[in-house]
Length: 122
Ligand SMILES: Nc1nc2c([nH]c(=O)n2[C@H]2C[C@H](O)[C@@H](COP(=O)(O)OP(=O)(O)OP(=O)(O)O)O2)c(=O)[nH]1
Image 1 (cartoon, protein in one colour):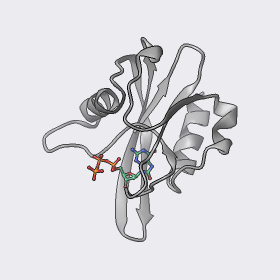
Image 2 (tube, rainbow, N blue to C red; image 1 turned 180 degrees about the horizontal axis):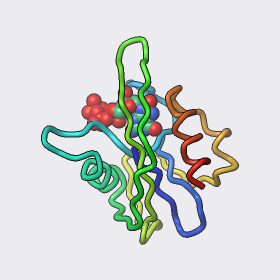
Image 3 (cartoon, rainbow, N blue to C red; image 1 turned 30 degrees about the horizontal axis):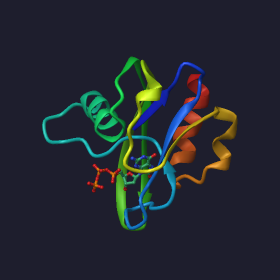
């Protein structure tokens, strides 16, 4: 998972399409790690695939496991700073959100711990 910041300290959220797992909820860019890929390489790849953004200052913030009724997921959370946030091209709706406003954007259940990890990291 990627906590992608712009130069104003806002965080990028993507709205997941209806019909996908956690559909209709706001989420961080990210997705499954491919075979032979590191978590860091997957984060860079997923951010680019989902938003066309590149970033610097990558930091590993930690890992979190969460079990939904139908799946068990392991999240590795990275933060980064997007070099040109206005260049974002996303298939679904996206928003740059102040940390203090994250509660206004309904997220998957697993994300409450991810958001707490962000707060601890500062
Ligand atoms: N991308 C993303 N997924 C999240 C977040 N929170 C959360 O519980 N999830 C869940 C939803 C999915 O079950 C899983 C991520 O899978 P995904 O569907 O985004 O990844 P993907 O594109 O590689 O997979 P797929 O849809 O092709 O099956 O993690 C989040 O903040 N961002």
